[in-house]
Length: 149
Image (cartoon, rainbow, N blue to C red; front, top):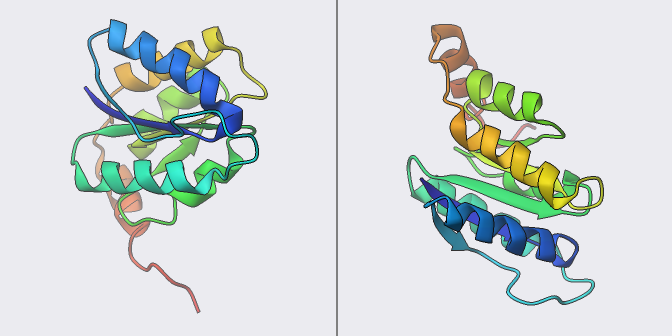
């Protein structure tokens, strides 16, 4: 599976551990930054890069890690075609994929250790969207308008 992964300084080490784990499973992983630990860097840059890559590379997925996962989730969801889900456990990751066809998983370095991050990411990657008409209709509505007046 093609995976784009990114993190800010707070998720930097977790990202590197997860990247190594995913590579060991045979996934094609592209690191979209941060490429070094720079305390105080912004979550926006890697979130934008992962969102754009996932949007342009149909069928790929992304994984973003920051302190709480809130910032990367909000940033990534500003792009049409991106469905970023902040998941705190394997069940929420499963539902995000099955019900909402989430294509970016957002994780918290503050609230999760590496084992938990691996568990949630594995579930996300192993789960497929269940293609029901009502789910497709709802997902399509996400991109009806990019701006609300």
